[in-house]
Amino acid sequence: VRHGLHDVRGRLPPRCDVVIVGAGITGALVADALAGAGVAVVVVDRRVPGSGSTAASTALLQYELDLELLQLIEKTGYHRAVRVYQRAAAAIAGFESLVGELGDGCGFARRQSIYLASRRRDIDRLQREAVARVGIGIEARFCNEIEVATEFGLPGHGAIVSPCAAVIDPLRLTRALLDRATTRGAVVVEWTTAILAETAPAGGLLVTTTRGSVLADRIVLACGYEVPPCIEPGMTSLHSTFALVTEPCDDPGPLADRAIVWESARPYSYLRNDGRRMILGGFDLPFRSPALRDAAIPRQTRRLESQLHRWQPDLLARIEYSWAGTFGETDDSMPVIGPVEGTDRIDFALGYGGNGIVFSLIAAELLRDRCLGRVHPDHALFDQRR
Ligand SMILES: Cc1cc2nc3c(=O)[nH]c(=O)nc-3n(C[C@H](O)[C@H](O)[C@H](O)COP(=O)(O)OP(=O)(O)OC[C@H]3O[C@@H](n4cnc5c(N)ncnc54)[C@H](O)[C@@H]3O)c2cc1C
Image 1 (cartoon, rainbow, N blue to C red):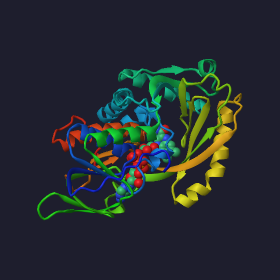
Image 2: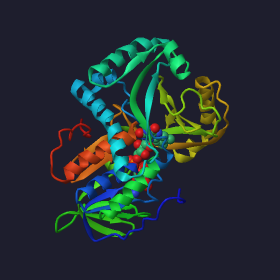
Image 3: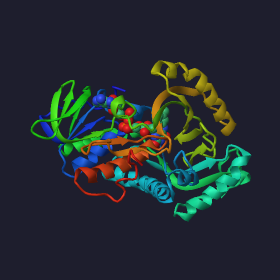
Image 4: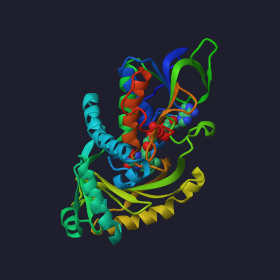
């Protein structure tokens, strides 16, 4: 990962308005939003920016959460669930305008989303789900088995098809955002671990790092799945997730550059097409340790490969590379954005779940308003105590 990333070795200044811990896609989005609003920001990362789960991500941008809308309504109530789905749908357009402003497409491309019924008994539920989504203003339709096969060349028992989805290159976006934030005065310091935050005698928060201290008014924790256990929000679990990419193929088939695919089975698998390559991922396992996760790569790659052949039987392409990553998940598949319990100046920006990147964009907007002392209408949507 070191190669190809720009060198960001700013020096830690003695004070700033906001320290952001973590320079993955979340930290970069928050830094860009804050720097754009005139806030003095310092971003620290214990590694090279973007080299956490951001670099491992397959980066499908979806409005659909791991919990379907009707399931989320049951879990969190109608208003919260509907708002979350609507915000996630709006975030797809948000990314489109962001990359437009940045002047670097960052691999952003619109796609349709195909949510396949993995089992025949899921059909009725998905039909009701499609109606519910349309009812809250999201464009979606249920396609039967024959339509899915003819339009997209996919097997299955039917699917919800929505035009609202996209793909992006998250590492490129992270770099572009940090570049812009830096030109707006942000300081990005890599290879620097935040160790401790304590109230300073003269007011403010003193953040101690492996390269000295910085005094700040607020802290945003965008440290991905490495949240210190003492403040862990308590509703999360870690998963190992697996992915593979094929060599470029001559004929990427009817899906080419049109759609991303995922399914109603849990744990699910998903497919995106990246020009002439196919990227397939999923089949998550509970996370135990990086070593055990990586030891499972060959086995999980074989499972993913069989799934690729099931979904795209005519595809002639060899697997070029496979990898694993870790990500956090909450039991309602929503992120944790907002104050760390018992504090009012330290905020979580934890874009957990399969829509992590979409949630990172929402986190940037909500936390920008918090840092500016404004009350955003959705400020409590992703609160730790929801
Ligand atoms: C294989 C895989 C596929 C995925 N696919 C998708 C997808 O299709 N769509 C989607 O939306 N999401 C997907 N995700 C999830 C998505 O990648 C994450 O939600 C997103 O990358 C999280 O970004 P982040 O910046 O919050 O975390 P990270 O990228 O992990 O960044 C956190 C940063 O914090 C730093 N850090 C941690 N602790 C400290 C500390 N104490 N001091 C200083 N720095 C610290 C780390 O070094 C790291 O750089 C996928 C994840 C994986 C692993």
